[in-house]
Amino acid sequence: MKTKLGMMTFLLALLLMGCNSQQKQTEQIEQAEQTRTEHSQSDKQEETMLTQADKDSMITIFEQMRQAMIDKDMATLDAILPDDYVAVHITGQTQTKEEWLADIENGEMNYYDFLDTEYTFSQEGDRVLMQVRQRIHAKIYGSKGTWSVPGDRYFKKIDDQWQIVE
Picture (cartoon, rainbow, N blue to C red):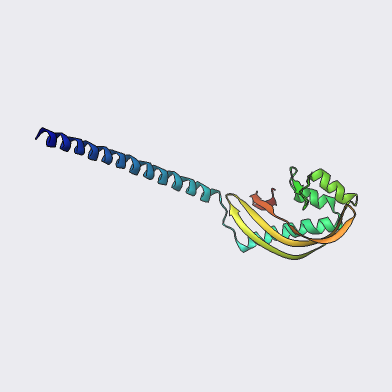
């Protein structure tokens, strides 16, 4: 009888421990859900609803930049690109904004045309990634050709205007 009573006490203790453990797991899950909901709500507050007009505005800025590259219009490029802009070339070479604009201005980089352009957009918090698929007809450091080059740019709405930020 003592053994049965001891065993029942032991089983009851295990059951209660399991319930406590289950309750703690439930509380942890509920807390994680609440945290996820809070983060999701704060992300939505930062996001801007992307309209066709927004997309058109970003495309216009990007096309102005490309035309300025063709025309060697340094004032327009300087105005469109942020001061901390870094150009990343298909070779992986990187240049500061100042270095890249100098190479365009001095004729080391000559852009002639941009072909077969396709745009896609994705919202990332308060920024928008505009992914560009294009072919560029250019002469870069003496090599002339037409290359498939992505032209991805990050935009952010600043003072109610879309601007390239990266």
